[in-house]
Image (tube, rainbow, N blue to C red; front, side, top):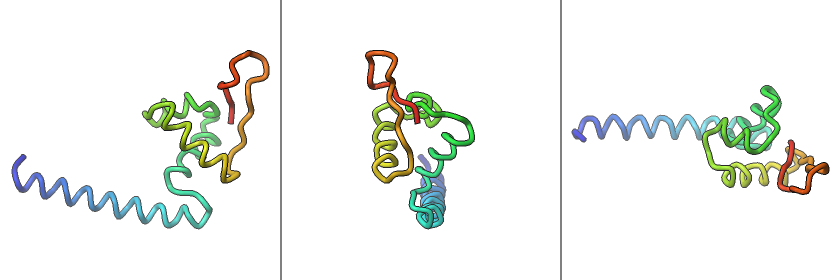
Length: 94
């Protein structure tokens, strides 16, 4: 990578980091991080109420999404509805 390209990359990364921090500051006024806000928005506005659908929407692994949802659950931001019809209790709706 050419030095000027590397500098542009670093400057862009720093800008995105400052933007993310600013968005986190705004979201924290409502008791969530910006990434948590985006998850909640996806659940409410797009009726994306299954962890596997959320993982797909955010292009992250199911375990990673499960960890993010567990934080929201523990903080009382979401409720989990467990599958009572089938034997597989891992299936939940939000």
